[in-house]
Picture 1 (cartoon, each protein chain N blue to C red):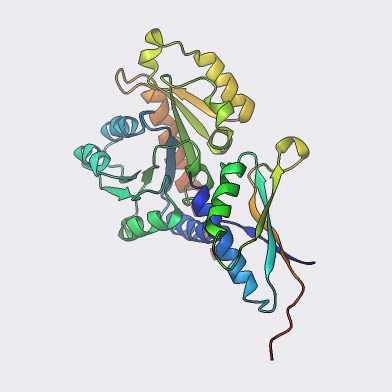
Picture 2: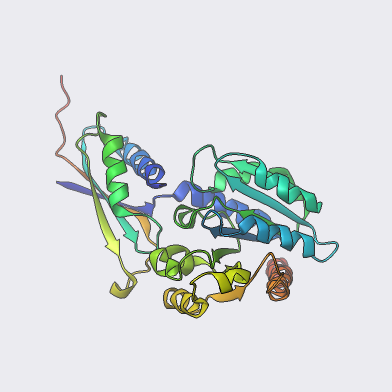
Length: 231
Length: 93
């Protein structure tokens, strides 16, 4: 028997493109977030309210992924920011190539913020790096508290969990404390913000989080450039 | 659900490696998959077999090493580890 070591990632081609995207987005100080959640968790509604409340003058853009239809892009376009729909035609996740293809001419626009809404799915999008700065997982109270335990991958990789649709808590048997506890069992450092599109609850905190990350991106990228210049 | 795509990427890698060893047939490809990689090993095994069936790679075997955090692994592995080849065939004169 002959054994040959290969030792590379299965998705090395995706990761290579993602790294190119990351470099390009770092070059323009663009904060890029990858939103992942089940179908119906409220990702699009969250983004709608977010776009509606972004500080004036924010240069933001949205890529939204679905298997079929332009419905989400049509909803998101009403807020005056550039929006593109990525229809995957069957694939259950976005990959770096799809993002690169749809992003291309936006990179030179010097965006502050790129919001990527992944295909509704808690599993497959987890494996594909899109060159983002952070993954944000959206879990709604209409789902189960044990989702973090059942689908640990995304809760492990996400920096922030938006516990969404909290306005429904009086009507559903969902224990938010247990959901937080489960998420922290999988990822002790995960940040958690409770949100509601309907009441606007949690949006001050969420928009503060967003603003501080946009700011941090501008600060964090610059010194590296100066270090190169003085080296 | 995306295991079919992952299986396809694995087979692409096998084809690439085999180009370096034209006298051999591949018998087994070994992967490392972490518990947080978002890949279901049974589903991947199923997709892999479906893609290999009826091709010149049949009967190529897929071996999955399951990597858990509690065993000191990262848990997000999705890596090709090694490829096993049969003994070289004599070139037919």
